[in-house]
Length: 131
Image 1 (tube, rainbow, N blue to C red):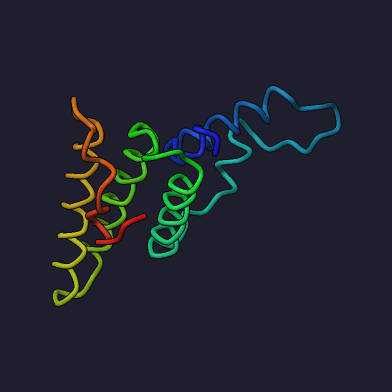
Image 2 (cartoon, rainbow, N blue to C red; image 1 turned 135 degrees about the horizontal axis):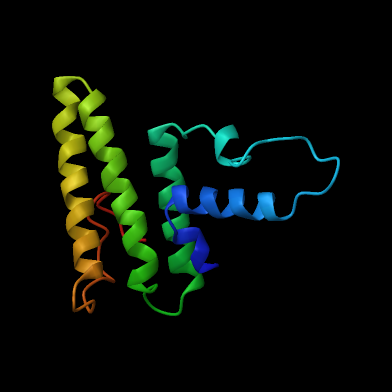
């Protein structure tokens, strides 16, 4: 799996915007300086969480051993952001579960970004599953 897929969505959109602007041809419709990102809508947070889980599983399936922490950490960080947003929008009886998942994802991302990564192959804490 290309490493670029682990980049934050905003960075990918910016790169796509730059590519489209560089490769415009005469006669192309005028789409401004952000032709890709202006047309994007943010994915539903729950769908994005499922997508991130699928990307993580693909990383594990395509790696010999544990995937590189540099690929897993951005996924965990984005999951934390999504869980925090869900916690803010959730009814009180559900907010705690999302806040706890966000904290676990942040801790996992910090572990992956930390000086040692020997334990990063274990259980993915935010979802409580092994990849």
